Length: 416
Image 1 (cartoon, one colour):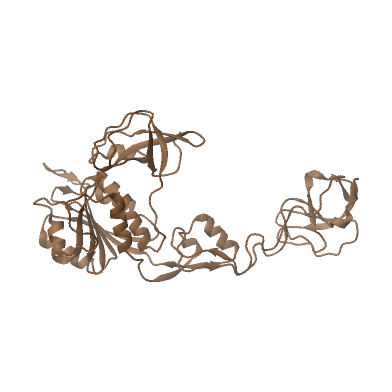
Image 2 (cartoon, rainbow, N blue to C red; image 1 turned 180 degrees about the horizontal axis):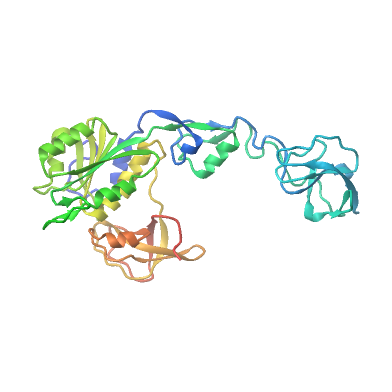
C-alpha cells in the first residue's frame, strides 16, 4: 500500500490535518455543460458571467406617482401640474410634454425623457385634470437610473459559485437563458457486511437493516452529484475487489460504509492494499475514528466507518468538503457558532467529539443548545431529532450547564 498523503504513525490524526490532506489531494473533475437557467439551481458555474445589458435597461419609476421636470417646481409654495398622459409598466408614454405638465407613472414604468423627478401618488392632491404638489417637493427623487443594478459588461456572478435562487433571478434580469456549469461528480456508494439485510426482508438472528446507504443517498442528494447506489457488498474479498475495480472505471468517487477498521472481517482495508493507493487513518474524532481515503485507479475513494453516526460525522467533516471541491466550488468547512449549553455534557479528553444537539435562538444573537438524546454511535434517533452537532475540542473533559460551546447547525431555521 502506498500512502499518498500522510506518513504511517501511531498518532491519531486531527480533524483539521485530515481535512488539509484531503484538500491538498483532490482536484475538480474535468468538463462542463451548458444548461437552461431553470435547470441551473445549485450547480457550480463554470465561467464568469457578465451582463450583456444595463440592468435596468432604461430609467424607470421606483413607485407609483407622477413624473415631472424639476424646473416646474415652485419654490416654497404649492403648485399644480396638468396630467398629460400615463406611462405604464411595459407601455411607455410617448407623447409630447409642455411646461407645467406631468405624466401619471407606475412602478417600473419608463420615465419620459423630459422628466427628472417622480413624486409618490400619496403626496399629491387631485384637481380634476391635474395634481397639486406640496410646497416641500424635492427634485430628482424616485427614479432608478439605467444600469443602477449592473452595467453592461459588469461581472454578475464569478465562476465556481454555486447558483442560488437569487442568482437565477439576477441572470434572468440580464436576459441570460442558459449558463455553463461544471460537470456533475459521478459517485458510487455501497455498504459492506454480511449482517446487512435489505428493507422489506425479514431479519434473521444477528442481522440488521442497512441504514447507512439510505442516509448516504440523502446526504449525496445534490444538483452537482450524479449518484448510483451499488447496494451491499458481502464480506467476500474477491467480490469486493471486483466491485472496486469495475466501479473505479465508471465513477469519479466511491464511498463505502463499514469495513474501514482492521478487524479480521474488515476486507476493505486488505482489498484496497491490493488495488489502490489508499491511506487508513486513525482520527482524533468521536464518533468515526477509522477513515480510509485515497484512489482506486483514477477514482477517489472514501471508506467510512460502519456505525451510522460515524458515517454522518465523517461525511460532513471530510467527504462533503471534498465533494464541493471536486465539483469546482471553493473550499468550505461547516459553519460554526457559539451557544450556551443548557445541560452538562460528559466527555473524556483525547478526541474531538461531535454530539447531536438541538439549538435554538432565544433572543437576537443569543443561542442555546441541549443534547438531542443518547449519544452512542449506533443511535440514529438522536440524530433524527437533532439540528446541529455540539463540537467539543479534543482536550475538553466535559461541559457544565451554562458553559458556551461550539455548534455546527445542520440547517439555519430556528425551532419554535
